[in-house]
Image (cartoon, rainbow, N blue to C red; front, side):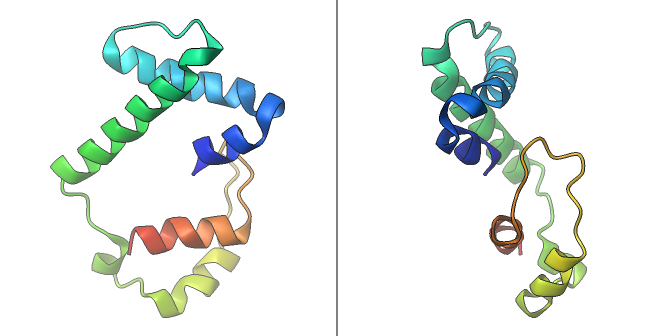
Length: 100
């Protein structure tokens, strides 16, 4: 979700996209020097994280008793101080729903 939001921000999101692209490039042993490669390397990062989540069989939130009925309460009490993108409550809820 962070990458999608940064892409929508256009010029102001480029610095953040570059950081994600750099991580994706590192995963391939390459370096991301050009803006035109941001999308490619960001995709590699997302695909790798999805693959790891599946391979490592990371539990979904439902395994810890979190249900859709509780999401509004969780969202209200969630702080994202360390997230590089300022997500609104709707974005946070979508992320959580995706992991139940």
